[in-house]
Amino acid sequence: MTEPLRCVTAYDIRGKVPDELDELLARRIGLAFVDQFALRKVVIGRDVRPSSPGIAAGLAQTLTACGVDVVDIGLAGTEEVYHAVFSGIGDGVEGGIMVTASHNPAEYNGMKLVERGARPVSSDSGLTDIARKAASDDWWRRKLLDAGDAPGRLEARDSKDKYVDRLLSFAGSDRFAPLKLVVNAGNGCAGPVVDLLETRLPFTFVKLHHQPDGTFPNGVPNPLLRENRAATAEAVVAHRADMGIAWDGDFDRCFFFDETGRFIQGYYIVGLLAAAALRDHPGGRILHDPRLIWNTVDMVTAAGGRPVMTRTGHAFIKQKMREVDAVYGGEMSAHHYFRDFGYCDSGMIPWLLVCRLLSDSGRPLSAMVADRMAAYPVSGEINSIVADPDQVIDKVKEHYSSGDIDLTDGLSVAYPAFRFNLRKSNTEPVLRLNVETRGDRRLLERKTRELLDLIGGGEKGGSHP
Image 1 (cartoon, rainbow, N blue to C red):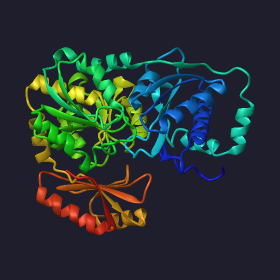
Image 2: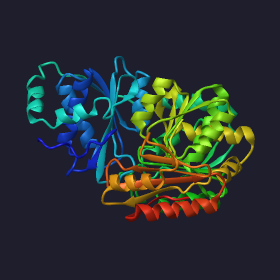
Image 3: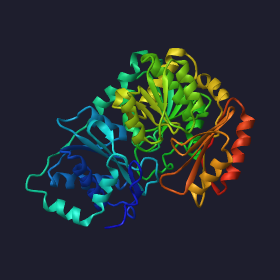
Image 4: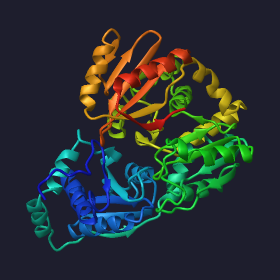
């Protein structure tokens, strides 16, 4: 094996099974990971995909054979692995591996790696070296020969109770009103955690696609896709629920529907959670990604906080959060990060916090976001397939050279009345466009069409409002 690993992205491992990622390659990557950081004890969790049990078992077998202790927490969400690492489940845990491909189709799988303190491993912090080692047959054979006669210990452990305790510590469960919630787990990993929370909360849950099933019989668990929203939206209306919540496969992202069944863009949830965080941490720093920023900056500044823009992607945001000690970070793609959760992202804490806001204010979610949506309307993320993404970005940059240009992540250009961000996908020849204006929907529509005409290519879809 000498070619670069196609399954390694900028901040995780993800590929089609078995063409781009199989059990043997996963073993090699896992061993390279513990070697890179000299880890002696790691946590392994897995999602519901048909290939996940075999990959997780293979990882545990290889690591223990090479003297590494493994704590297997079984079926879990990605944040459960994070929690197990930063909270120190089992003495001496130093890292974690989550076997998941998140919202990708069932035939895909992958791995998310975290080292001590649940610090993410990305291309900036060791993932490139890990991929190089894993691709080397000589390195693999040498590590197996050097394994020695003292195998590591394999321990199966259920960590969900302590994890649920940690979730509830964020929201103050004694402050909740008796809400009715539609919850759609997408046949991913969220269902078992919701069931545990249900016993400790005064909520009535209407459960959709609740049972874990890695074949995803009700569609790929990605609520950003418009076609995946109808079931949740319709159930909210039919059951007269206070809110709807849907998750992706490994539930590190959650998505909201108001009491009318309307899907709420993650951008506006970032502003809500930022303002809530600042009530508990006055003057704190709030991280946000560059794709859409005006509403977040406005709300953070008004609440006395300090907004900090950083590159998109969970590994980069977690690193920046530690650097500036941010209390909260949010991405418009529905990743939400919390300092008191190991600087990690969670798909469970956000909806608990929004429920607390509903309970405290007595206002529906629609009323909480209506003014913000009117003040800063957005296009939603629109994906375009192009032959040469870099060439297109250069063309767009030249066309809008009179604007205020920022290159933190892709191309951001701001004018007094409108702003946009255009960035490349990490995995495919796709450009992702987001446009926002200051209260002008007609300008939004006009500038969005103008940009799409300039970009050209074929439209692939995205998270349109």
